[in-house]
Length: 451
Image (tube, rainbow, N blue to C red):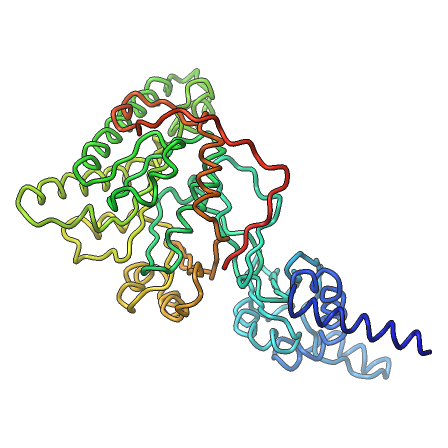
């Protein structure tokens, strides 16, 4: 008994230490088993207490009366599947007649307390089926991205959501995005992480960094074009517009609308073209967009109008030509002048890090997800990298990108420098850098974590 007691105490101490220092390890070793048992044992009483049950069917009551059996009690949603994950549990429920997915979503906070989980989110998969994603610990405190993610070519894993799922920047589904955030909010790290994930892929990177290039020029060996001042940026954007028009000519030449051409061979964008004819997609990264919109003289105003016009044209027409925009800034509103709100309307993907005022959050989410405004302004100052991500559907989620140091981003870009495509229209803007041998990949990559 003494040895048994010592072993039990040792296991309890180890579990407590893991839960304090390594919550992810605790979850995989002890937490997931305890959570599954807790959910299965408490399920019926919890659903009844949360008002997520319905009276039994009339035929059950009638059968109980005829057979003189005990009357059946209220019926909870059916458990279709319980799936443990590396961060929590996924519970799939089948709703009973008369139940609504909104009732489940409204009870997520009570379910979180009742099942002793860190967080619970709900989404409707299809009519009558609801999925509850439960997290066992604060996954955003120390971000650990999974080793294997979706291999789609333009679907980039950039962050981790609060429900434990990977947050992707899907350029084909959401071609243009806006990222805002105050100083030291994690906006630059988010952009750096995006470049790091894009570097190993067959894509051209174009950067506009009017802070004299301090953010993007260290990564220049992976960029096909870079601009570090508004004058160069205006010429670069004009070149991108010309490139876009040339791509449309390629698409038109391949369309072939004769009746003998199969429907699947009629091209509407670059992804409908054969691989040997498909132009390389371009991701345009703009850091601090306000520097492109501000002006102090009439000459600067002409340049500014030229820049905004080019950005609006790329946002409206660039998707089919494979030109995608990722615009970053501290503020992005009508005070930046004519055409800004038209540009913002084309930026479907919205990400807001910590902001200094509610107006800045309204600029990102006021027109698509009003609930996300309160979430954005509630991000604490010490939560570097935490952000709210939303889109035009009105849905939003809290995310955090893994911390990516500038040295790591530089090494990744140098390692994949040979992937940088040569685009004739952008050749004048390609950074002139000495040739360096790519840095070999390390044998073991440590998992990125958020500070």
